[in-house]
Structure formats: C-alpha cells, structure tokens
Length: 368
Image (cartoon, rainbow, N blue to C red; front, side, top):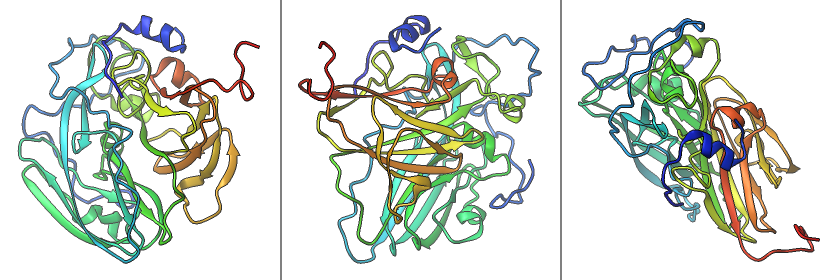
C-alpha cells in the first residue's frame, strides 16, 4: 500500500469511476455506560427531515484506523495443539472517514477491523481484554468461535481502567467474526468494534500467494456522505437502517488510486485469498470482485465443506466472515465492491487490488 495526497470528494469520485437496547443473546445485563470524560461523542437521534449543522472537523487522534489488509498472521504450520496468549485493547479515536470528514470510531487495537486472530482447531487461547483508563465507555467481546456464555461477552465486560481474562479451546474450524456485545452493540459495531478469528482445520488451508483482510460496516451519522465537518453518531438513522456510509476498513474509498491508503498491489499470477468480515450491524453485502470471480468460495466462513467454484457475487450477512480465492491471470485493477452499487457510487464502499505484470492478450486484449 501507499499513501497519496488527499483530494476533494468530487475529483476523487470522478477518478475512481464511481459517480457523482434490548437484551439479546450474548448481551450483558449491565447498562451501557455514559462517557466518563470528554473522549466519547454522545450519539444523537436526529429526525430524518431536520437539517443539521455539523461542527468543523476535529483534530485527529490517530492518522488512520484503517487496518492494513495485508496485516494477517501467517498460516498455521503446526500439527499439535498449542496454547496462545492473545491480548486486545479497546479505544475510542477521532479519525477521518474521508478528507475533511471526522468521526469518533471505536476500535480493537486502534484498527478497523480489529486484528485477525489465527489458531488451529484444538488450540487453547488465553485471552485478555484491556479497556485503558483514559477511555470513556464499557466494552466487551463476543467471539463467534467460542462455546461459552455470549461467546465470552458475559465474562469480558470492562469499564475504563479494567482488564478481563478468559480461556477457551477452539473447538470448531472456520473463520468467524468477533465484536463488542454490550447492550448497544449495534452502535459499537457500527463505529468499528469487530474483527475476525480464523480457526484453521487440522490439515490447514490450501496454500496461496497472498492473503488480504477487509471489514465492511455501515456508519450512521448526523451528516451526509462527503459533507465536511465532524460527524456524530445518529441512532435514528441506525434504527431506520439508512447509513451515511458503507465502508471497507473504516475509510471511504481509502484503498483506491486516489484514496488515503492506495490500492493493494499484487503480482500477475498470484493466487489471492480474501477474507471479508461483515460487521454490519444491519446490511448484507453482495460481495463481488469486478473483473474477476471467486475461484473458490468458502461460504459463511465454512472451511471444511468443499468450496463453491467460480462464483461471481455472494451474500455475506452481518455477523459473518467469508473467505474466497481468486486467480490473477491478467494485469489491471480488480475492484472489490458490494454489488448493491449505490453503496459504491455514493457511500464509500470500494477497494482496489492492482495486479501488476505484462499483458496477456490471449486472455484479454484491450487493443485487438
């Protein structure tokens, strides 16, 4: 990846080619905490027909919360059960959604999606969750890969300044989501508190050349997409399931030619495995690679059944991690999109994998 200078939204869209608290299973009984300091924005409930005057953009607390898509632990290379010490910490950080637009995200380890955890079936994980004392809210974690109350959420509630520990055995293979699961979990997930835990089968996964990790989520704010200023979280928009943005790794068009992070670069001929964690909290993704297909698709994170073959578009429900592989026989951009295309055109959901190498006119000839 690379960093490119910011551009205004209109110029970027043209260049990118995208145009103009009920208690649930896994929740905790304790109420959500009011912020104890000035770190946390108060969510609003703005009537949909009432205009809002946004604050100016706020000073950034972190340059970016976008997870590096290449930042994945290496494949499992052991054949006996292991013990792992895994630690995550929670933060609330002001960062940019796109140039000139700020928002106070919630994260695991200052990144969205949170770090991928990678183990083998039968491994034991000693897990620690820390909520630093300078943060403002109650958090916890629900692992969909855990047999236990709330996927460990019941026993990992941490107020600012607290730490919780649990231990679990990874009993079933697959790639699964994890997320904050306090009573207003939808708010916390939308703001960024989700990630993936990969439990490899005993025999491992097929070898590939590259692995990438993205997280899709909706952001519900009191502003409009591209409207400069500081956006606060808007509860009513979330209840209406009407997001301002639908994002990959917390940035609008961040992984594109003109985006803040730049496209992901791969070499022609690489076989690529992509993981998509759909945090939601509400919308199903129609996951599609423009200019390619999913050669092998592991639906719903199922790594044991035979994969589906040559799939163009697949649904990824909120609370699900999908895994898929594709070949790269020709150079050029592969655009990762949600094929609910208004989310691409107007709400920020686009990432580019740039395949570099010599042309292959027998496969694709742009100048016949």
